[in-house]
Each structure stands twice: as structure tokens, then as C-alpha cells.
Length: 90
Image (cartoon, rainbow, N blue to C red; front, side):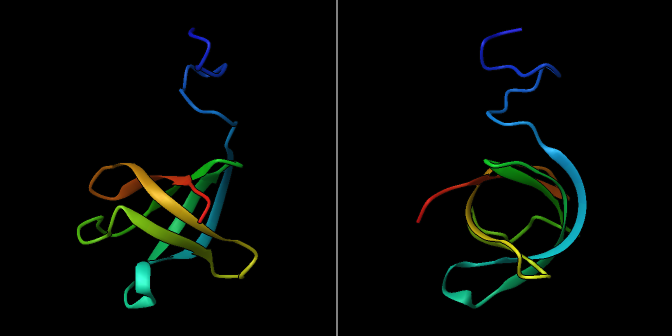
């Protein structure tokens, strides 16, 4: 295990908590939104699941449906239906 690995062997700065929350990814300029499910979240980022990652830009706003969280994000990685988001300051 390297110094940047956590106890699970993942290279994350903060442990993630499992969740299952409805959310939206809002494109810059608020012209496009994409429904998603937040599968896990930490202080530094989140894993979201979408029907397709095609067309979702690399810079996005994550907004929980219950409006308890809205964060600016950068896409750290993506597959066909999942994306790892890194929270960034404005």
C-alpha cells in the first residue's frame, strides 16, 4: 500500500460513504441537466450513475434532489454509465 492508498487500496483522499440519492448533473450555463444516482460520496468527491455519460461535460455541478448539496465538480474518470467526480472550488 502506498502513502496515497487508503485501507481498501483505493487512491482517494477521503473515505467514501455509500449512498443512494437522486441528483442532477447541471451543465455550465444551466442549459442542460442529466438525472443521476449518487452511489457514494466523500468530502472530496462522488461516484454517480447515469443512463449514459455521452454528452456530459468534464466540468459539471452536482445537485442533490433534496437540495442539501450543490457542488462544482470535475470528472476524474468515466465509463459508459458511471463517473467519478472530484469536488472543486469555484
